[in-house]
Length: 115
Figure 1 (cartoon, one colour):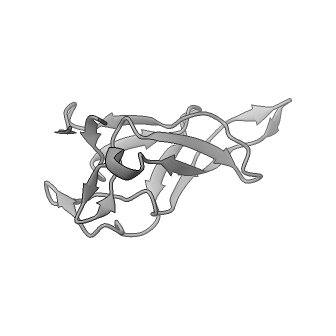
Figure 2: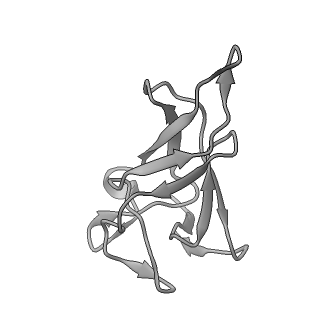
């Protein structure tokens, strides 16, 4: 059984190199938590401001791919998978090379627990 805090747009998400991660459109789930949209794994997340380099050549993270649980393990709202701060994810370069997991932090220091 999965557990963790339900992510909404009140969370700060960054790549492992400090770039800012944001969903590019309104949350596909249509669900709101404390008035803030709850993003779904199917939403597109972009990374801006990543300063990662390889051999002094910029090689920034540009997107995040989330891998939520499947079947009975998935946390769903109205049948749509939602993201938890414990959901597996990878930040990717423009060439789709994995560059590490995102860092997810609630702005208020707390979140809603899903179990």
